[in-house]
Length: 158
Image (cartoon, rainbow, N blue to C red; front, side):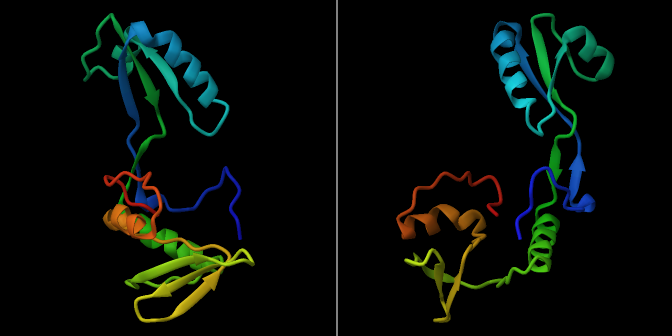
């Protein structure tokens, strides 16, 4: 089953909505405003705060006349263990099979469009879609497969 955006996972206890402020110099305001306009056509909700408005909303920050901030009200952070566990349970409820702590030795794309995974236990599994959660081991794992690594080690890769 596929989830169409926008969708709600119902994982309210795994996400902490803290909001974000990104401070920038006024010299880049036109460029940033154009980017925000483009991004605002999707689910991302951003707005520009000039120093006077920002000072009223967030008096705890130092606001300077030559700066503005991009405000992302719905930004926040996820609690990694809780979020991962809930995403796995959601995937299972939609028909996915999950194997925790299973080593992957090889992955191959088959001619019929399916993906075959060889586990460390010698089991061969095939499916139309495969998601591998390798966490901090992702770069090393992708290197073994000869795949380019476009991940950042600072984030859980799901």
